[in-house]
Length: 334
Image (tube, rainbow, N blue to C red; front, side, top):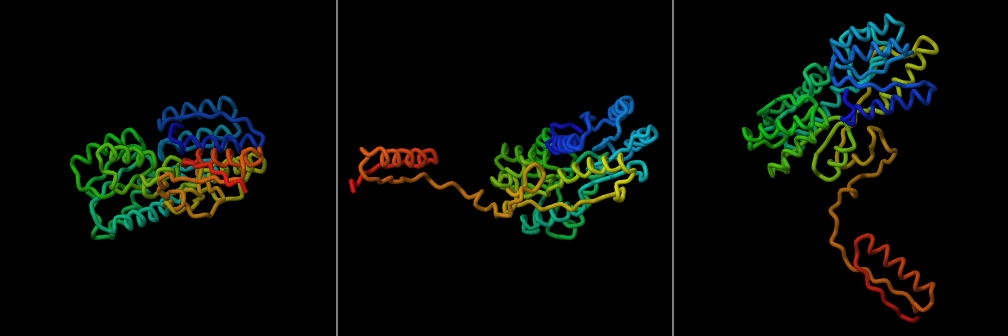
């Protein structure tokens, strides 16, 4: 789909980089969730005699024909992120465990809201199976809590701009809303912008993807939680499995593969970047601490006529000022 969404952009870049590392040339194409455009791109790949196609598809039903056409031409397809409705056409379908991710996020959303109050749900594109799976996961948790009341449910088609417009309208009809649960991160960013514009920054917002933009918003207290999709792992696995299949005729794995997701909160959001763990396990609490008012640092040295002591004082004072402090340079002359 469109690479302006960092989720899809990262997926494409990581998969292409891994394929190139494995010795292949790559052609990066975009279908913008248009199944007809997607078919044209498949025909381009067939004409150029591609040895494999890695695809984040444009519709669970509509994509089957394109993948079958490639298969008939001897080109295997490796699907990431979104499944199709038919098995045995693609070689691999590697996806996040969207249902598991949705349930852990809904549990955190309910906890943030104290398990009571009015909330709004923004859903993804109706042709995308993931939109329905995530919504089902949310409701399997939230519908079991009598204090949680959904006052509106509307699609924003995965779009940040559309989410902003939809949220502006919904806020007028639902001024007492306490939380908003979104089907992806770009919609969560649009919702947060609409809430800020309306002076309602105390409304809880959660997203779904684990993009760097939302991680930063979680760490600064704008968005309250998210669910990380293992984009890097999916993309890398697709390239590795494509290479294995090309060389050996088998991936050694089942067609359908699901990878569990991670709940993102202010405690751990700094441990992930580029949809992948950084390797750090340190708490992020320090990263979100409120800055303290700049104070005064005294820098005291022996006589500054000695260039050693003079340089020591100047360098220490300059660094302190760079960090936002005032300085007072004093001399004790031993």
